[in-house]
Image (cartoon, rainbow, N blue to C red):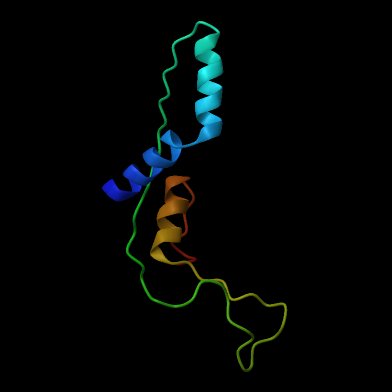
Length: 88
């Protein structure tokens, strides 16, 4: 987490475009306060399967999607107050 925060901070402080705009604001007689908020979350993966859907499986018909929810999907839906108990 610290490395990621340091990388974001460094990229912002080294940006010529940001520096130029802040300089213009200061020349206009203003003090500049830049506060950024980032929410970064980490979840351990449930499995190592590739992202996306594989090609058609034997016996599967084209046009019939394989719909599965993992625990992260269910948590997200619950945060939106959507019940997914029957679908999981």
